[in-house]
Image 1: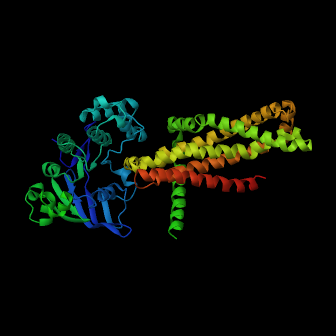
Image 2 (image 1 turned 60 degrees about the vertical axis):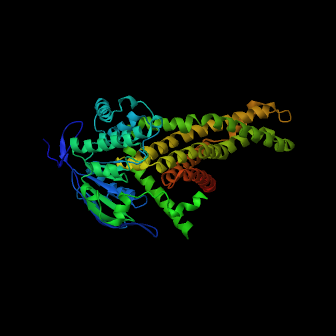
Image 3 (image 1 turned 180 degrees about the horizontal axis):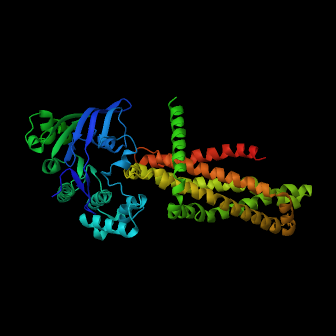
Length: 268
Length: 250
């Protein structure tokens, strides 16, 4: 049995330490607009942390800080104790990001999308690359899509290809940006199961940004709620099933008022 | 003030991109397929339009020269006029303008689209520098293909001029005479100065288009805006640089 703080490589079954993420008083402004306000947060090695919040609350911006695509206006983001804003950190810690729309390379086939990382970093020879790519496609049930172009895939398949592309990088830290958005409930459940399996089988630290309540409450070890750029709470899912904070309760359990007076004018 | 800051930021990011791309030059042999693909895009696919336009530019030059010089009894010098004009100025200039309109716009559109749809961000998170696989092969390919395209443009233009000078009734210049004066007055240095211009123009066009493409922010609308900006800036720079290069190469 593996130690839960060791990431097990899905291809070689080698083990390497899972990594944690730490945000210390992070603020981010775009001009006069404050998107993140003094956010402090710690993601433990090997856990699934789900960050929830309404649209425009700064979740994706926070995610980009962890991979170094955005730099904080103030505060510090570290991954495995290394400064995330330093580009060399990406060379020292294996982290992969699954983008909301997949961000697949449209000029390449699914196979080449997965092989690109391995070829560019000269991880192994072509036979080894083929083995790793096909293994990743197999884990995600995508063997038949290898030669297809990303434009030929459905939304759910694109998400799975994006996860497979992340998987071949053998990440110690896997970040997901809205992995279940625009998917039907069945496909959302499948993606949630994949995220949970990657954690259980390979002990990858997972940071998931989502506003999918069922995903958060079913697979997360801990859930953070971000609203208006502020982190309101971090708690286990069980504690959020019946939240006491009215703001969080309104977000997680919104009431649908079919006779909302705000929309009365639409009836006319 | 805002515009000045934007221009300075643009120059800064372009220089940074070039410096980073230069640092990856040792990786170029590994990128042979990408380099060859870009040579095909920049060279082979541009060749037909370069040939057609060069032919007609040479033809028009010969026609105009024949019309003006015929009254001075100097029509045998049409060859020298066409030869020098094509080699020193019109060949490289026309190829560069075609490059900006045809290849530059495609580069800006492709890279802007990759940026807007987060493909560039995906490369960065995979620790694959975009300058290495997106910029460097294009720069290397344009440096190889520009002299080739310019030499072909010069040759086709010269032959276009010869055909018109021979076949138009009021000029009716013997091709032998045309090429004799062309050879006598068009020296190797003239052709070489045209090739230097072509290299500089090509390098600038691809650099500008890559930089504007990679710095695109926003949505699909900005992709169109990036293409327009890339072509306009490239054309302005070609004309401005042409003046200074002509002066320097005299």
